[in-house]
Image (cartoon, rainbow, N blue to C red; front, side, top):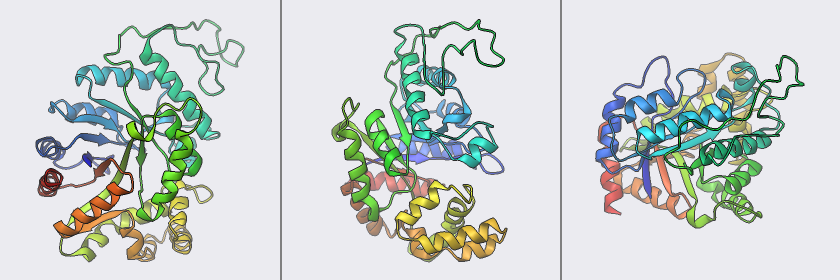
Amino acid sequence: MRLALQLGYWGAGPIPDAPELVAAAEDSGFDAVFTAESWGSDAYTPLAWWGAQTRRVRLGTAVAQVSARPPTSLAMAALTLDHLSGGRHIIGLGVSGPQVVEGWYGQPFGKPLARTREYVRVVREVLAREGRVTSDGEHYPLPYPGNRPGATGLGKPLKSITHPLRADIPIWLGAEGPRNVAQTAEIADGWLAVFFSLGLAEQYNAWLDEGFARPGARRSRADFEIAANAQVVITDDVGAAVERYRPSTALYVGGMGAKEKNFHADLYRRMGYGDAVDEIGRLFQAGRKAEALAAVPDEMVRETMIVGTLDEVKDQVAQWEAAGVTMLMVTARDVGTIRQLGELALAQ
């Protein structure tokens, strides 16, 4: 099992001690470092800034939001960072949800699977640099059609001025639902599992196998990476660790999506927490955040955590690996935990 440090996105300010965390991850044998974005800090700037002090770890976005950049712009950022890092970039993409896409980016959310497929195809075409980039797709037409409102009709196909260091920078996709996970296995190089649950491992693997079996699938399970996000806490006080992450669970289930469409909430319903999800969402939407937190069951928080003594954590990591996870993306925020996890990985 490879380890990665998931720095995520910022809150009100930068992540405290991020350079020290990144240095500890690289020194401890971690395979990769990831950043993310929501509607505040972006994914690429911190990744390049902190990544400039690294020499070995891979540098990934988990995730860069599809609606934040046209696919050609994302490809420009990716090939730039790949050059600067000596070929260590991982492109991690996700569609986010309608609340963010329409409320923050001012774009329609419709047809997220088709948009993702088209987006990935354009990115790969830019990186391949085999010719001028064109697309007759519904979502990202290139050149922009001259008969559309506001168009000049002067657009022409272009090819990247800069030659990519790698034409096949790996693309991993964040996905939660059955159709999205299956498509990820079909068109991507890896799956970013935002909330992984051992209880759903059999379902996950069935969805992935459906994608691998499709005609023209890019990968097989043998060369496909499954990176699962997890809060990993080595402690004798499991209760305190649960309390620390209860607000995060409540936020994603109750506040990180619209009442009518929240993919995180849907995933927790699949885990068997439907009644709790409904109550948390109701309270969160009513502005009763303290009550929403109190409505989150302990076992719901622990569902996506790895927590306990060092030996207990070791056993849980082995269970996730047996379920198909190839990389554990940990959200550790202290150097001591990172070093302990590195030693644990080396001991296995």
